[in-house]
Length: 82
Image (cartoon, rainbow, N blue to C red; front, top):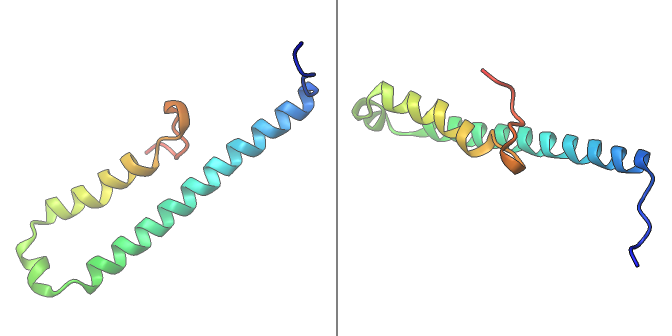
């Protein structure tokens, strides 16, 4: 015998709460990672910035965060598209 199912309204509310939780957690993680990255780059010695090509810095700054944070559970994108 199966346990009773919750009413559809309860299921919908829980799904919405879960979706907003994922979005909130993703945005918090992205802000935290961006702040740490910015702090690290700004505190780097000038010799590091002179040796590092600007394209490599921009590539790591822009592409890496989206790949790490932008995808949620099940392959659905929770971040805003570019």
